[in-house]
Length: 480
Ligand SMILES: [Zn+2]
Image (cartoon, rainbow, N blue to C red):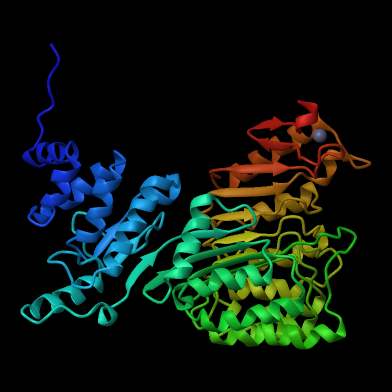
């Protein structure tokens, strides 16, 4: 005989209400507020759109997080919540309930406490003050504080139907709502489209901006006026896509110089910037200087990948005080085989006490150059991850490198290039690759205990995938 689960009185009440929509809606004014969170979750997951809409209007707490909504984008239930918010916005008189101030659709709200408490920092204290004013007439709708709606949106060419609907809905209500998107991704959109998206939101709430575009410097300069309003940004990703693969990069022509200058000047307003990612760009030395000069705080992350850099850039990096406390440095895909590498050594020395990840994948650094970096690298005892794939190292260099990592006890992931001796006229000799990697792992184990160590060859000529040694040898897909 099965055991019936014992339901609490609250659960039984919710079930009874969910079976009778009219009763549930009429009871909302007198329902104990402790029942609201559970009833809302049940109504939401059972697609009871009428109850969900009425509950948004009557929500007795200042904060409501609608969990999972933006992941499923179920249009009926999504519309029900927005209709509820419309109901709250159009009310002429404040209901006895209806205390909602923040509606949170974010996937992972960082400031979220708990739906049960129904409160949130800032919002909670504001509510306490307003409750002390009991007896005063309710404020007229136009004098009420605007309801804040928090949401994550990803602006790309193929947006989901519910996302497009939400944008249109929000556009029409932007004067009565405070629309906040903490994490903005704009991928392959025209400047006009980007303007439409951004006009809906309060720009000072944006913390993370990811811009993947094929714009010219002049278009970026036009966009940069928005950067000055995004004054609370802590992370900026700028990715430039090249459609013309023959072009290594797009060096600015003379006419674009001013545009570039305008764009980088806006960085001076980003006083909270901590993480800067640049990918696919090409800068003249003076423009990189301008960017670095406009930084206002020490960066934690400096990632300049798939970019063309010159000798002078490395020197500028080493001299910039805001790059001296880096936790993450990534120069992957930047060809360094023909540069004087000592400035990079200085940069590593400066960040030795803080650097946690170092990625130099695909830089084609030679033995003699990397040897210059070893003394500085050995001081980086906080490193947890290194990636040196696709550099031109010999067995001897790798052994020396391992001896310089003796005090890196925090390392959890180490990625090294297959030694040069694995190749015969650019073809990989599989058994030599396995044998030499195994020897190198033994060498490192005699120095310290690595947690995870991998070696990878350059990409295969047919499928461009590498062979990887990670305790066992994995061949590229076309040889498996
Ligand atoms: Zn292959």
